[in-house]
Image (cartoon, rainbow, N blue to C red; front, side, top):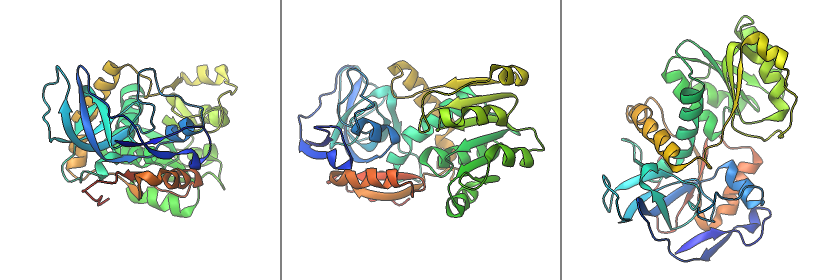
Length: 334
């Protein structure tokens, strides 16, 4: 098969489409013939040499895919050769074939074509596990989503609205904020021109956000704590603004607030399987009903994955950037 390899860390040009050995499914695994994958921030870090795959994972980038099962490993039940699926991966999605633990498979949701389904696993699992399973966002509460126009952000807006929460977002510029509003965001904050702490306070009569989903990290830590409501929960899932910040424990104590930090890729297989099962139970029906939908910015041929990385790095995208495998026979409609 062919896959995107990274012979040496570097810029987008470091991604090389090359022939590699076919993977073989082991106990409890399936082999998926990939139709599409998607670009995630973690892939950019891996390309640059800053985020190695977990031990035992595929060396190729790609944290999600959609395709068809072409072989079953020993001990797999509930799936058949030919099933159309999408999957959460620890790596290997930028390839014509990938091995997936059966617990990380999802059926393609009703109303979504096969290639577009590649836009769903990583964002759905990240948002559901963090906002709902960890931070326990409830109807009537306010959630602040940083990077509202990102793949994570576009999913977070829709899921939070679907359960009856009030959604605030930060994004760069009027065009991105308009897209967030179309998805249901109530409070629109241009981080380039406005202070999100001040704007959130105005919009909530000083109460702040019950839950904050943060992709920035250190740069926003102090302001995020200021923006939290009493009993608020800050969940940090990205470090685009650095890894070391100063935390005012007095402010945290006064608000009886919590700060949590999580990552999805390195979790044990059983934890990922539990998240995937929860997503199938709670998120897939919303997608099937049309309440929540995948947001795709553009598609790029997989051998030209460098262009997909450039698109993500430019910051001009809204939603997901998909990579279509060369033999893909299902064009995305999203």
